[in-house]
Image (cartoon, rainbow, N blue to C red; front, top):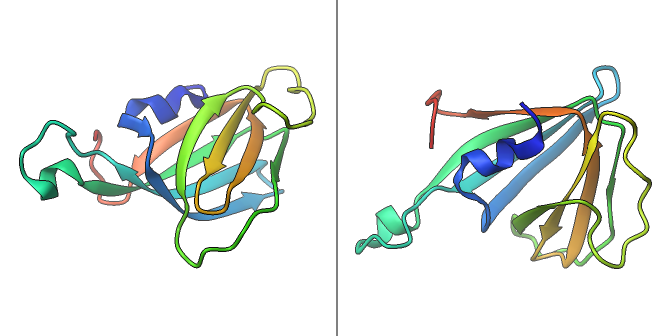
Length: 130
């Protein structure tokens, strides 16, 4: 699976909450712990519409990653995600066989950029799908 693992969620990573980021230099893996919004925007009841699920995205074959400075809010940042370099940022090119992705950290008004080969998504509750 490539980094399109983000798109497996019903709402992608739109308005997900980033809880933790860790990097293993031994395994070249970036681990993102996320409360993903998996609710149904069309649902009449608030709990169904605003449902979140804890998941982990493990990016493997990380060529590089960077977190740009931003304001500290004391709360988990809401995120959006996209492919390629975010406008206005000078980040390295993607090493051969990797793809560049960015996460916008809304509460911090900053970006996390990464280049990785593959990703896998798993839910904390063990469920297979959103």
